Image 1 (cartoon, rainbow, N blue to C red):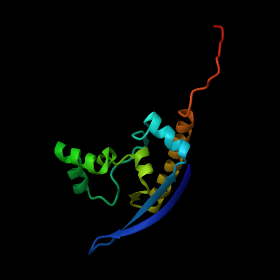
Image 2 (image 1 turned 30 degrees about the vertical axis):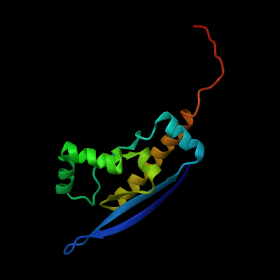
Image 3 (image 1 turned 90 degrees about the vertical axis):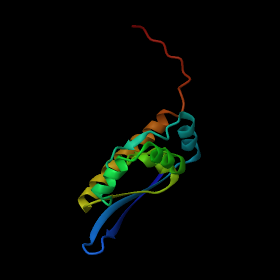
Image 4 (image 1 turned 135 degrees about the vertical axis):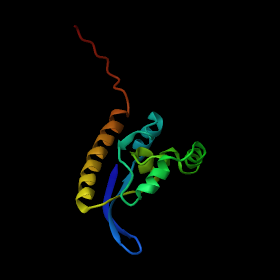
Length: 141
């Protein structure tokens, strides 16, 4: 598992410019890790729970939360089930680079630390799910 983390910035707004600080993560899984993920169906496992990004307005977040069932199903069919939520899942990492925007550089640094911890847990989870030990163990209680 090779991880690349970059910090990016974007500016939004016509009159009152706002700068958002993003953390972009790209994870390249090797063939064995991809096989474990698909065999054990780990794609929908959540690595990080997170709210809506800072570059999304409160009104847009409310609109996203109040979408109808038809719209949610259409989004799931076209973009995948993970597109209906903001949490970071294994499927989002498999699809490619994930960029999450925050309001300040301090928040971006804290998010990066949480992200690194989550990716370490993911690696352990994949290794732990790789195979069951074939040894027979016996013990006395």
